[in-house]
Amino acid sequence: MNHILFVGFGGFAGAICRFIASNAVQRLLPLAVVPWGTLAVNVVGCALIGGLGVVAETRSILSDSTRLFLFTGVLGGFTTFSAFSLETLRLLRSGDALMAALHVGLHVVLCLAAVAAGDALMRLLLR
Image 1 (tube, helix red, strand yellow):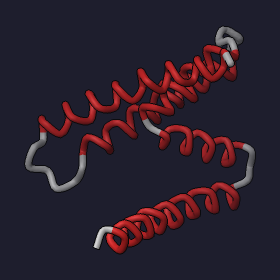
Image 2 (cartoon, one colour):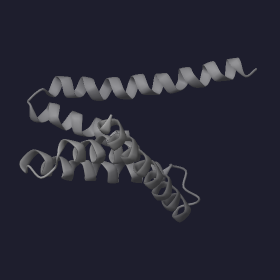
Image 3 (cartoon, rainbow, N blue to C red):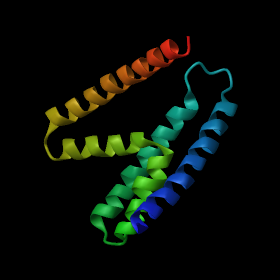
């Protein structure tokens, strides 16, 4: 149960940070066609998980609870793209480039297809 609370509190904090950061970037670039706020959050989240991932792998200073709070909770709430990117990097580092490419390809294709399917289903239901 404690692990669930660590993830939950971290996710709460991460989601709030995502909302604030994304909106701040969008306010700075109000006429932008690209959703720069989302991109900025994803890039920052990836940089953070990359750096913290090194600390977690090379040092024994992060407890399991802290890792759950930071990685799954805070950064997961901030952006799940960071987890996806770290998983892809680990596949590449393990020498499994084909699995890394499959991982990326499946995420892009299936997630775009899922968004389109959800959009189409809701439009159909809301007629």
